[in-house]
Image (cartoon, rainbow, N blue to C red; front, side):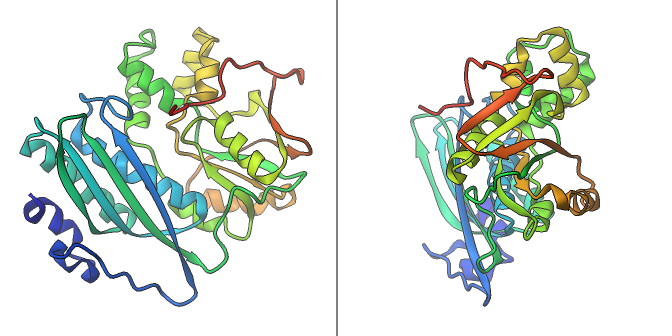
Length: 318
């Protein structure tokens, strides 16, 4: 299976030795730092068994690329660990690898090695991505400054609502809207190019994986600041707007549900014109949603400036 399906993914990286060794040799370029991230997807937890294998492969790749994007790093190599349930057939593997292959080409990343085992438990997929960024220039969560504007790319809430659709929710939405939400859940768009463009402009950055409120909370905590967000400014897709108009209780899911993989970052509002220009160059929607201040915590404010109470803050693994 390794020779047939996985070795072809590694053929462009000479240090992988066509996956015939247990290690890879990685030579770092002078003047660059290596950025490393790892994510695991478990069947029944992070994806549905009914999801197309091609989209599962792409999602596994993209959630890691989103982490690299939040650091401003350019994708370079990845390691792959597959614990496949005993009933996994070869057709599933072929389609899963096809998704990886398409995204390798799209994002310029190569397989360096990994491990493949069988498991009596649910299929568990782990990908470790390595990126490169100019030495000392990686974007961190800890650099937000008082007075910074808070920005987010794309739209928020589609991932959580897409999962809801797959579980039978949002039935009143049109077929087109439901398909849009499901696509956003299954195939997030890592903002790799824009992440690199933020170096020198963003003070702190994170990607939205566990929910906007939770991830902004991580950024604020690591920076020793507070964050205020105007709920009316949060960018929503047409499908999310329609769903929320029909059921205001969905607002919590939109703010805390996660799986959006958009970039959330802070920067000097005086440089907003340049930030917006770079977003436009990447053909990317960008919205200023709030401000960094003194104190601690994340404060979600309505149109009157009253804090919105949320039953939860974001996805929790434990």
